[in-house]
Image 1 (cartoon, helix red, strand yellow):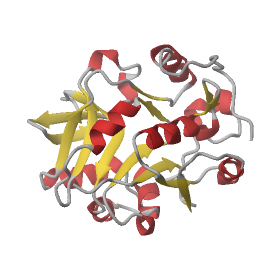
Image 2 (cartoon, one colour):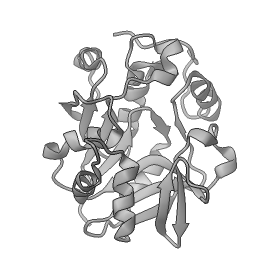
Image 3 (cartoon, one colour):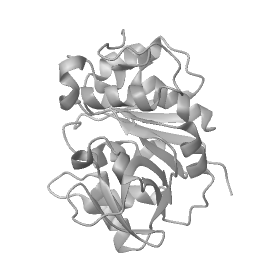
Image 4 (cartoon, one colour):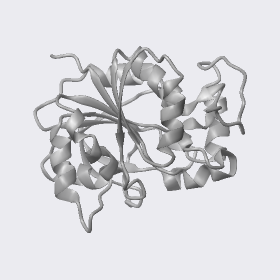
Length: 252
């Protein structure tokens, strides 16, 4: 099995739900335990063994570029601009298509996770044209169930996905192991110039090519709101041993 060496991080959104503490900063630069959320994500990618990172930027990309210029993060970083960042995240993923040529890890810039979870995902054998989504079956521990993307499985295959589905047995963690075929499915899912990642996943479901991998006791958190940030301070307290600074934003 060939080692996965690339990671795609989606960091284009404007983070409207966290505006009360982020102000005009893009959400990836909001500080969590002493450094920007994006830096935590890149650190975990590196710890998982990946050294080639592609980041899709959108809202206030100038600030993220300025911040990256002043950091040595020990990975190679390629930046891609998405001028259509107001659209769904599937459009952001498609903007990086020319930079991705082999199987890759797909992450969100506002999701914190255990590096062990990413390493476990990267150990999986990916069939041609397949995507593996890391899922959390521990539904009771989710902080904001209404906002979470849910999945329904049959065996190890995902048969439905979305925030509004009525029947589900696990949650989408925002961590995917993908083949480049994902981009074809996102293209096929575009309607009225827009598509979400979940739209692309439904294309994969129709072909039986979306597989689930349980994360077990691994922790993760979507840092989408001030309340979610505060919650993450508690659940990751034993991992990030720095002084909590909830309510702060990263300097740029």
